[in-house]
Length: 296
Figure 1 (tube, rainbow, N blue to C red):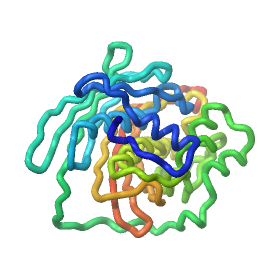
Figure 2 (cartoon, one colour):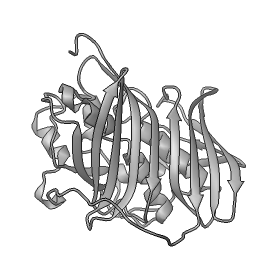
Figure 3 (tube, rainbow, N blue to C red):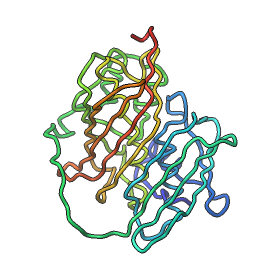
Protein backbone atom coordinates (compact mmCIF):
# COMPACT_ATOMS: atom_id res chain seq x y z
CA UNK A 1 0.00 0.00 0.00
CA UNK A 2 1.32 3.43 -0.88
CA UNK A 3 2.39 6.21 1.41
CA UNK A 4 -0.84 8.09 0.83
CA UNK A 5 -2.82 5.25 2.36
CA UNK A 6 -4.99 6.14 5.28
CA UNK A 7 -8.62 6.52 6.08
CA UNK A 8 -11.22 9.20 6.26
CA UNK A 9 -14.26 9.59 8.44
CA UNK A 10 -16.51 10.21 5.42
CA UNK A 11 -17.24 8.34 2.23
CA UNK A 12 -18.13 9.56 -1.22
CA UNK A 13 -15.74 11.58 -3.39
CA UNK A 14 -13.12 11.99 -0.65
CA UNK A 15 -12.89 8.24 -0.05
CA UNK A 16 -12.61 7.75 -3.82
CA UNK A 17 -9.75 10.27 -3.98
CA UNK A 18 -7.88 8.54 -1.16
CA UNK A 19 -8.24 5.27 -3.03
CA UNK A 20 -6.94 6.97 -6.19
CA UNK A 21 -3.79 8.02 -4.32
CA UNK A 22 -3.11 4.43 -3.22
CA UNK A 23 -0.74 2.84 -5.71
CA UNK A 24 -0.23 -0.80 -6.59
CA UNK A 25 3.40 -1.98 -6.15
CA UNK A 26 4.60 -3.76 -9.31
CA UNK A 27 8.31 -4.13 -8.59
CA UNK A 28 10.92 -2.41 -6.45
CA UNK A 29 10.53 1.34 -7.15
CA UNK A 30 7.72 0.67 -9.66
CA UNK A 31 4.05 1.45 -8.99
CA UNK A 32 0.76 1.65 -10.88
CA UNK A 33 -2.06 4.11 -10.28
CA UNK A 34 -5.61 4.33 -11.62
CA UNK A 35 -6.91 7.38 -13.48
CA UNK A 36 -10.11 9.35 -13.03
CA UNK A 37 -12.13 11.68 -15.22
CA UNK A 38 -12.95 14.84 -13.24
CA UNK A 39 -14.11 16.91 -16.20
CA UNK A 40 -10.79 18.08 -17.63
CA UNK A 41 -9.96 17.03 -21.22
CA UNK A 42 -6.98 15.00 -19.99
CA UNK A 43 -5.85 13.46 -16.72
CA UNK A 44 -6.05 16.17 -14.04
CA UNK A 45 -2.54 17.41 -13.25
CA UNK A 46 -3.21 17.31 -9.52
CA UNK A 47 -3.89 13.57 -9.76
CA UNK A 48 -0.47 12.92 -11.30
CA UNK A 49 1.21 15.20 -8.73
CA UNK A 50 -0.46 13.43 -5.82
CA UNK A 51 0.23 9.95 -7.16
CA UNK A 52 3.87 10.74 -8.01
CA UNK A 53 4.42 12.14 -4.52
CA UNK A 54 2.75 9.05 -3.05
CA UNK A 55 5.14 6.84 -5.05
CA UNK A 56 8.18 8.82 -3.88
CA UNK A 57 7.01 8.73 -0.24
CA UNK A 58 6.86 4.93 -0.41
CA UNK A 59 10.67 4.85 -0.78
CA UNK A 60 11.41 7.22 2.13
CA UNK A 61 11.36 6.59 5.89
CA UNK A 62 11.37 9.16 8.70
CA UNK A 63 11.41 12.18 6.37
CA UNK A 64 8.75 14.45 4.93
CA UNK A 65 8.68 16.18 1.58
CA UNK A 66 9.70 19.84 1.70
CA UNK A 67 9.73 20.63 -2.02
CA UNK A 68 8.86 19.25 -5.43
CA UNK A 69 9.35 20.44 -9.00
CA UNK A 70 7.42 18.81 -11.82
CA UNK A 71 6.92 19.02 -15.59
CA UNK A 72 3.88 17.82 -17.52
CA UNK A 73 5.23 16.39 -20.79
CA UNK A 74 2.20 14.87 -22.53
CA UNK A 75 -1.56 14.72 -22.09
CA UNK A 76 -2.58 11.91 -19.79
CA UNK A 77 -5.31 9.45 -20.79
CA UNK A 78 -7.84 9.03 -17.98
CA UNK A 79 -9.02 5.77 -19.55
CA UNK A 80 -5.70 4.04 -18.80
CA UNK A 81 -3.59 3.47 -15.66
CA UNK A 82 -0.30 5.30 -15.09
CA UNK A 83 2.97 3.61 -14.11
CA UNK A 84 5.33 5.50 -11.77
CA UNK A 85 9.04 4.70 -11.69
CA UNK A 86 11.01 6.07 -8.73
CA UNK A 87 14.75 6.74 -8.83
CA UNK A 88 16.30 6.85 -5.35
CA UNK A 89 18.77 9.56 -6.31
CA UNK A 90 20.34 10.13 -2.89
CA UNK A 91 19.85 9.48 0.82
CA UNK A 92 21.97 11.79 2.95
CA UNK A 93 22.13 12.45 6.65
CA UNK A 94 19.30 15.02 6.57
CA UNK A 95 17.88 15.00 3.03
CA UNK A 96 16.69 12.44 0.51
CA UNK A 97 16.20 13.12 -3.21
CA UNK A 98 13.82 11.24 -5.46
CA UNK A 99 13.01 11.45 -9.16
CA UNK A 100 9.69 10.08 -10.38
CA UNK A 101 8.76 9.41 -14.00
CA UNK A 102 5.13 8.76 -14.97
CA UNK A 103 4.62 6.48 -17.98
CA UNK A 104 1.48 5.82 -19.99
CA UNK A 105 1.15 3.90 -23.26
CA UNK A 106 4.93 3.43 -23.25
CA UNK A 107 5.74 7.16 -23.15
CA UNK A 108 6.78 9.56 -20.40
CA UNK A 109 3.95 11.95 -19.60
CA UNK A 110 5.40 13.61 -16.47
CA UNK A 111 8.49 13.79 -14.35
CA UNK A 112 9.09 15.18 -10.88
CA UNK A 113 12.02 15.81 -8.56
CA UNK A 114 11.20 15.82 -4.84
CA UNK A 115 13.31 16.43 -1.74
CA UNK A 116 12.59 15.03 1.72
CA UNK A 117 14.05 16.19 5.05
CA UNK A 118 14.43 14.87 8.57
CA UNK A 119 12.41 17.22 10.87
CA UNK A 120 14.66 20.02 12.10
CA UNK A 121 14.24 23.28 14.03
CA UNK A 122 15.72 26.54 12.75
CA UNK A 123 15.16 30.25 12.13
CA UNK A 124 11.63 31.25 11.14
CA UNK A 125 9.88 34.23 9.56
CA UNK A 126 6.99 34.69 7.13
CA UNK A 127 4.78 37.21 5.37
CA UNK A 128 1.42 38.00 7.01
CA UNK A 129 -1.76 36.31 5.85
CA UNK A 130 -4.07 38.59 3.83
CA UNK A 131 -7.00 40.08 5.72
CA UNK A 132 -9.99 38.17 4.36
CA UNK A 133 -13.34 37.06 5.78
CA UNK A 134 -13.35 33.70 7.58
CA UNK A 135 -14.71 30.70 5.65
CA UNK A 136 -17.88 30.59 7.76
CA UNK A 137 -18.82 34.05 6.40
CA UNK A 138 -18.53 32.94 2.76
CA UNK A 139 -20.83 30.78 0.62
CA UNK A 140 -19.80 27.35 -0.59
CA UNK A 141 -18.38 27.77 -4.09
CA UNK A 142 -20.16 24.59 -5.19
CA UNK A 143 -23.52 26.08 -4.24
CA UNK A 144 -22.76 29.34 -6.06
CA UNK A 145 -21.82 27.47 -9.22
CA UNK A 146 -24.96 25.33 -9.12
CA UNK A 147 -27.18 28.37 -8.44
CA UNK A 148 -26.45 29.59 -11.97
CA UNK A 149 -28.51 26.72 -13.36
CA UNK A 150 -27.68 23.38 -14.97
CA UNK A 151 -23.95 22.97 -15.40
CA UNK A 152 -22.09 21.41 -18.31
CA UNK A 153 -21.10 17.87 -17.27
CA UNK A 154 -17.38 18.75 -17.27
CA UNK A 155 -17.90 21.70 -14.90
CA UNK A 156 -20.13 19.60 -12.64
CA UNK A 157 -17.48 16.90 -12.29
CA UNK A 158 -14.69 19.43 -11.71
CA UNK A 159 -16.30 21.89 -9.31
CA UNK A 160 -19.76 20.64 -8.35
CA UNK A 161 -20.93 18.63 -5.38
CA UNK A 162 -18.87 15.62 -6.47
CA UNK A 163 -15.66 17.44 -5.56
CA UNK A 164 -13.70 15.90 -2.64
CA UNK A 165 -12.95 19.45 -1.43
CA UNK A 166 -15.03 22.34 -0.14
CA UNK A 167 -14.15 25.81 -1.47
CA UNK A 168 -15.19 29.19 -0.06
CA UNK A 169 -14.04 31.96 -2.41
CA UNK A 170 -13.35 35.50 -1.23
CA UNK A 171 -13.72 36.75 -4.83
CA UNK A 172 -16.37 34.44 -6.35
CA UNK A 173 -16.15 33.68 -10.05
CA UNK A 174 -18.98 32.86 -12.44
CA UNK A 175 -17.67 29.87 -14.42
CA UNK A 176 -20.29 30.27 -17.15
CA UNK A 177 -20.52 34.09 -17.48
CA UNK A 178 -17.31 35.53 -16.01
CA UNK A 179 -16.45 39.23 -15.94
CA UNK A 180 -12.88 40.56 -16.23
CA UNK A 181 -11.28 40.93 -12.79
CA UNK A 182 -7.83 41.53 -11.30
CA UNK A 183 -5.48 38.51 -11.45
CA UNK A 184 -5.87 37.62 -7.79
CA UNK A 185 -7.93 34.93 -6.11
CA UNK A 186 -8.25 34.05 -2.42
CA UNK A 187 -10.13 30.87 -1.60
CA UNK A 188 -10.52 28.82 1.57
CA UNK A 189 -10.52 25.05 1.10
CA UNK A 190 -10.59 21.81 3.05
CA UNK A 191 -11.44 18.19 2.40
CA UNK A 192 -15.14 17.30 2.38
CA UNK A 193 -14.70 15.11 5.46
CA UNK A 194 -12.31 14.39 8.32
CA UNK A 195 -9.14 12.35 7.83
CA UNK A 196 -7.31 9.94 10.08
CA UNK A 197 -4.12 9.58 8.03
CA UNK A 198 -0.59 10.80 8.73
CA UNK A 199 1.42 13.77 7.43
CA UNK A 200 2.12 11.91 4.19
CA UNK A 201 -1.58 11.64 3.40
CA UNK A 202 -2.15 15.35 4.02
CA UNK A 203 0.79 16.41 1.83
CA UNK A 204 -0.24 14.14 -1.04
CA UNK A 205 -3.76 15.57 -0.86
CA UNK A 206 -2.37 19.12 -0.79
CA UNK A 207 -0.33 18.34 -3.91
CA UNK A 208 -3.56 17.16 -5.58
CA UNK A 209 -5.65 20.22 -4.71
CA UNK A 210 -2.83 22.69 -5.37
CA UNK A 211 -3.50 22.33 -9.11
CA UNK A 212 -6.92 23.98 -8.67
CA UNK A 213 -7.42 27.71 -9.42
CA UNK A 214 -3.86 28.66 -10.45
CA UNK A 215 -4.43 29.01 -14.19
CA UNK A 216 -7.97 30.18 -13.47
CA UNK A 217 -6.46 33.17 -11.67
CA UNK A 218 -4.26 33.95 -14.68
CA UNK A 219 -7.39 34.05 -16.89
CA UNK A 220 -9.41 36.40 -14.67
CA UNK A 221 -8.29 39.65 -16.40
CA UNK A 222 -9.75 38.38 -19.68
CA UNK A 223 -13.17 37.29 -18.40
CA UNK A 224 -12.36 33.66 -19.19
CA UNK A 225 -12.51 30.40 -17.25
CA UNK A 226 -11.61 26.78 -17.91
CA UNK A 227 -15.22 26.32 -19.10
CA UNK A 228 -15.11 29.14 -21.67
CA UNK A 229 -15.46 27.99 -25.30
CA UNK A 230 -12.33 28.23 -27.40
CA UNK A 231 -9.95 28.18 -24.43
CA UNK A 232 -7.14 25.62 -24.22
CA UNK A 233 -5.45 25.44 -20.81
CA UNK A 234 -2.88 22.90 -19.62
CA UNK A 235 -0.30 22.85 -16.83
CA UNK A 236 3.30 23.00 -18.07
CA UNK A 237 5.16 22.87 -14.79
CA UNK A 238 4.37 22.97 -11.09
CA UNK A 239 6.44 23.62 -7.97
CA UNK A 240 5.58 23.29 -4.28
CA UNK A 241 7.32 24.04 -1.02
CA UNK A 242 6.03 22.59 2.25
CA UNK A 243 7.11 24.87 5.10
CA UNK A 244 5.33 23.42 8.13
CA UNK A 245 3.11 20.57 9.26
CA UNK A 246 -0.46 20.98 7.98
CA UNK A 247 -3.87 19.38 7.83
CA UNK A 248 -6.02 19.58 4.71
CA UNK A 249 -9.18 18.68 6.66
CA UNK A 250 -8.92 22.05 8.44
CA UNK A 251 -9.55 25.28 6.56
CA UNK A 252 -6.58 26.56 4.55
CA UNK A 253 -6.41 29.83 2.61
CA UNK A 254 -5.07 29.61 -0.94
CA UNK A 255 -3.91 33.15 -1.75
CA UNK A 256 -3.10 33.26 -5.48
CA UNK A 257 -1.76 35.98 -7.76
CA UNK A 258 -0.79 35.96 -11.42
CA UNK A 259 1.90 38.60 -12.06
CA UNK A 260 2.22 37.93 -15.80
CA UNK A 261 0.83 36.19 -18.88
CA UNK A 262 2.88 36.21 -22.08
CA UNK A 263 3.80 33.93 -24.97
CA UNK A 264 0.52 31.99 -24.67
CA UNK A 265 1.58 31.07 -21.12
CA UNK A 266 0.15 32.18 -17.80
CA UNK A 267 2.12 32.25 -14.57
CA UNK A 268 0.67 32.06 -11.07
CA UNK A 269 2.14 31.80 -7.59
CA UNK A 270 0.45 31.30 -4.27
CA UNK A 271 0.79 31.07 -0.50
CA UNK A 272 -1.20 28.61 1.60
CA UNK A 273 -2.06 29.70 5.15
CA UNK A 274 -3.69 28.05 8.14
CA UNK A 275 -6.57 30.05 9.53
CA UNK A 276 -4.35 31.09 12.47
CA UNK A 277 -2.09 32.87 9.95
CA UNK A 278 0.76 30.37 9.72
CA UNK A 279 2.19 30.03 6.21
CA UNK A 280 2.36 26.27 5.63
CA UNK A 281 3.11 25.91 1.89
CA UNK A 282 3.81 27.82 -1.33
CA UNK A 283 3.15 26.97 -4.97
CA UNK A 284 4.05 28.25 -8.43
CA UNK A 285 2.86 27.15 -11.85
CA UNK A 286 3.17 28.08 -15.50
CA UNK A 287 0.51 26.84 -17.89
CA UNK A 288 -0.43 26.97 -21.53
CA UNK A 289 -3.21 29.51 -22.21
CA UNK A 290 -4.35 29.48 -25.83
CA UNK A 291 -7.43 31.43 -26.85
CA UNK A 292 -9.09 31.14 -30.24
CA UNK A 293 -10.60 34.12 -32.05
CA UNK A 294 -14.06 32.75 -31.24
CA UNK A 295 -13.35 32.90 -27.50
CA UNK A 296 -12.27 36.53 -27.74
